Length: 356
Image 1 (cartoon, rainbow, N blue to C red):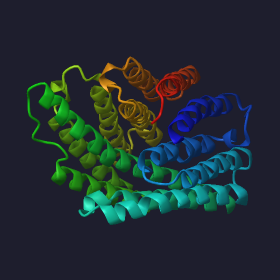
Image 2: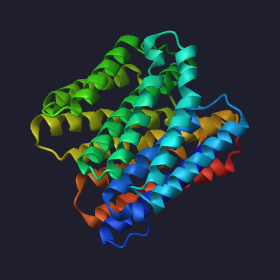
Image 3: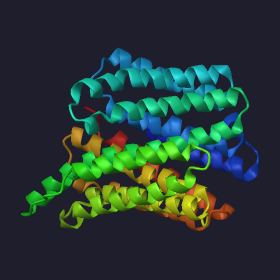
Image 4: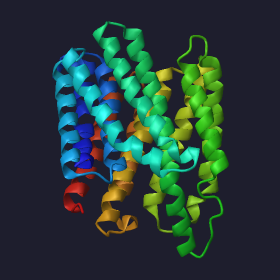
């Protein structure tokens, strides 16, 4: 339910919002400024993907109610951004999502690292509420802070969940190829990543703390790069689906490294670094994970999919266009078109492969 909706929504909202940014002729009130573009990419699209991935054990009635709340949140924000109605709808969706997911991880996980989804999701819900409260009380600096923190929180979520998806899949693929993978979850590196990113998130919100937050972002980038290299994805023969997930993880490394450079040296625009995370990493990982989950549940081999590699290549091209030519309207238009093409391919795959 959430995967097809998120794929369609992600593919449509980006070009619609970019059209408003470039022409000033907004098609929807929410996209009168780039703030709405960021809000819907993070809290509309990405949070829907999180819901689709994390909610596995719940009744059809609860899942349907959550989906209705998501639709209400999207409609209210698109038409009435900054209103009390938009605040109520979006916070209700986030709170219900947390209510369905958080207890599962708090009760089912024993190690602190495995419980991390609970505080992460609660933090995402909190910054969403902060964003809407700031909009209601006309505090633009607070809205920007909420969006900044949400990008960092999604980066941490992708670092954690990406490792939990890639590591066992790589181990299985390498074993079938006659090899053996020693470094799987890599708990010490994973723990260090989580602590480093948590400190980065906290310091980035403190006045005067961005320099140290930038150093921490660089440390997180190095740790993630070491972790990715130790998975030895090049040894997973004929597994382009895993290579594409590895590409998404590499975009996280790049995004955190660019963010560290932006905050610690001031030599790079912060928005450039954020787009490496929100376009490169988020786009590549969400398309790859949604496709892989659907194919696996339908008893199809993801390695044989003719869609996953083109999706990853298209998202990467979109990210490169956005990063290398940040002020070029033609490049922004091309990036939006490539992003939509990738999600169009995903929608076609989800429609072709039946859900189970």
